[in-house]
Image (cartoon, rainbow, N blue to C red; front, side, top):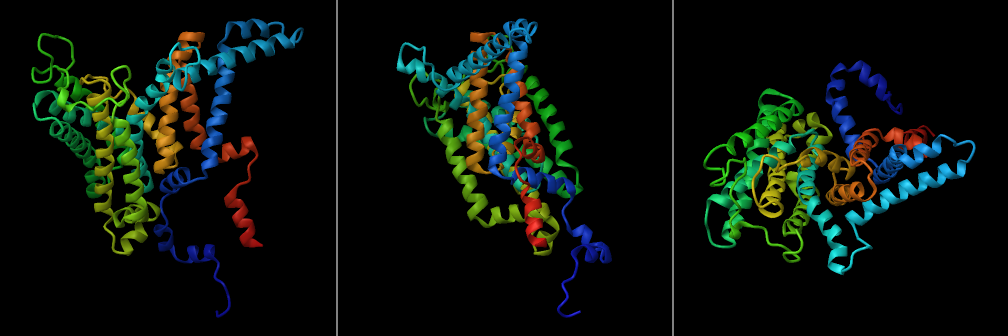
Length: 414
């Protein structure tokens, strides 16, 4: 009737086809996690560090001893708990940012350079995963894509002998190509058969792990005169140059990661292709109705994400390690999932989250060496960040924050 506003709920009940237009619950949840308020990410880190402090106290022998007579002398318990937590987090800071006990300035800033070095593959892989998240794809195959990037880039790096500049460029392109090909397998299967990208990328991760182990047993990949699964050293012309000299491991891969972040920002915010990615991620059915090829978009998204993750592998093999080994990817691909989620799938947020996780990696070893705190505490903190990032209502409940969706609904009803 004219002048009467239709009820969306009744319209949905009357038109069964309307329910199929809305994105699935999984895609909606992914969009809520990756596009939420940045304050939730910050508070999730704060809450995770607080819970980590509880674990540090529980693992400290002095705190355990003071807990036996807590009600008789509570001050002793509080003092022991504060000492354990402050010493552990101080050691973590000194191992990741600045060492106040160092004798020289170069030695004092070395932890910061290690943090930056550790963050490079995390930033590259996190940027690739962030593109997938914003396009509605839960790509968790960065681990395998890093490995394939390291295989392609590493082989070009140690097997070819080319002029300086050209050799490094071709090695980087090869790493991007390797990661892109590996990720595109999942993209093509998703587009052509509807195979879920989570299952496919998990399997591809395992295949990549065994593939690099097999290749390192071949003569073409094995170092001459060695029976260990390790490649020859990367040719000097293919190495990423060091930024601060031979006394530090920080290399030009960090600058490339920052350039990649700017490129991803331009792609997702200023380009037509990025608009297509975001449209498909918001509602693939509406995007298809508007004339966009959802299937082709999936392939493009996975290919670009794999290329970025492949650069992460190149940074490891051409810059940090300078050899190809079976553990070249470590756990960077899995940690990058948290980096992308913590950064809310935005380039700047991903860079900052990558630096944070690089600091946890670099400082965790110093914390264990100086205070005896188990390094597993760092892993628990990372896991808690994942848990809290994936549950924004839980963070709001802990810090008693209002729910913006409920506030908007109340305002609309008013």
